[in-house]
Image (tube, rainbow, N blue to C red):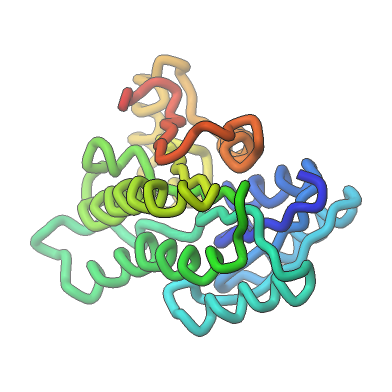
Amino acid sequence: MTGKVAIVTGGARDIGRQVSIKLAQQGAKVCINYFGNKELAEETLDIITDAGGEAIIVQGDMTKAADVKAVVEACTTVFGDKVHILVNVAGGILGRKPLAELDEEFWDAVMDVNLKSAYLVTRATVPFMTEGGAIVNFASQAARDGGGGGALAYATAKGGVLTMTRGLAKELGPKGIRVNCVSPGMINTTFHDTFTRPEIRTNVAAATPLRREGNAAEVGDLVVYLAGDASSFINGESVEINGGTYFA
């Protein structure tokens, strides 16, 4: 990936951090978007630059078109007018609410951070992509199985990401731009530290054929594969990474 430019939204922590680091290790110049935690973004940047990689950090709310435009402009100003790789990691469950408690404002917020963000960033980035470009979106096992308790809005949004991925693969494929999707299961991140009870995590890990949770580095490796030339005939696919708990 030497000489290629990558944008990673939500690239400061957990899976996004590992994606950013691993792309940089392969030689890519990485634009790391973060939303609220500058300290984590700076830590990720330091890890990359200390290892000899090239990266910048850019704050922005990826649910806002103006912020998205500013991130893309910052990236192309520093690294040139071509973007070769886009990884839409930004997203989140925001909370667990059953239907009876699922108000319109919360529903809209979950849709925005998971689905609208990927649409806005993709729309802003594609004009800078040429043949050979690769987009990797993030769905979830929840998109396939409906998610756990209180995850209706999140699962629905991630299902939208799956559909958008397929539609974009058809639209952008003739331009030589591939669009694929990663659908993680139970991965050891602050996402589950915050929103999933420890006993549920223990039970899920025990029921997984590999008898453990996944880790962010494993997801990062999959993203690098989908973003690179080794996957040049994979397009419109959702790759499950869940240790065998669900088969698409």
